[in-house]
Image (tube, rainbow, N blue to C red; front, side):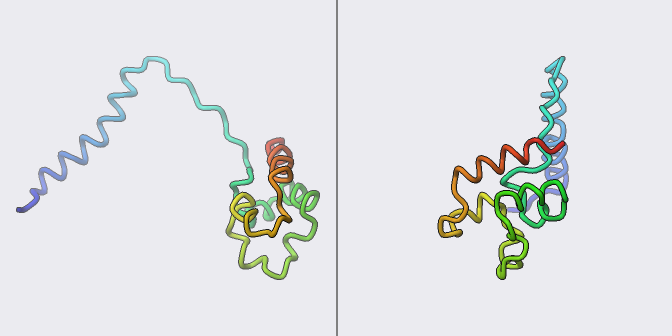
Length: 105
């Protein structure tokens, strides 16, 4: 069985047109709330790269960017790293860090 290039084009156009049609039916879409700049789901290296976010990390996890294994975990988020931290990063700590990161505008 062969797949016609025209059929593929039709499917592509249908995929693009469907969301546009859905938007046309909703006369007053509401804008989503602006997301926080940083969260506990942000990669650690991105947090360290921003002085404000780094200050939050240093407050709760002093020296995290100096840890011997930093290069191995810097691409992970705090939320991802927590289960591997041997209890060093607790749910309570994540909540406090999340609250502090949410204040960064």
